[in-house]
Image (cartoon, rainbow, N blue to C red):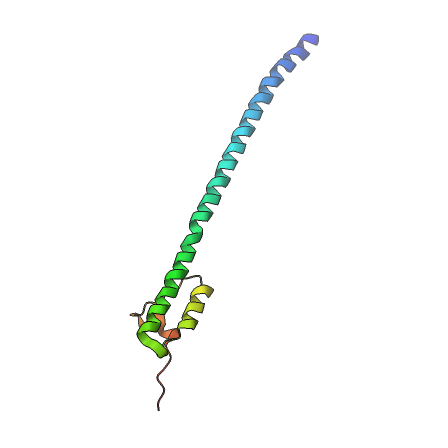
Length: 106
């Protein structure tokens, strides 16, 4: 009986070590995945900011083109509200229609 206990004690350290190595490998993979996720988020953030900036610049361009007939502030507020997803194109009537002020009859 004494010899079988010694054999189990001899085998357990190897099994324990291989489990530790597997756990470390999983831990390292999770750390790498976490770091890649953070980097991806950081890279993706400016994309939204660029879209909003482009949208606001287009609003300013349309305001210069159409003057008092274009609601530039409303256009810029819409850019911020929708995070630049709806970028106005001054040459596309459908994209600027919500911001055009109708002519008044005098």
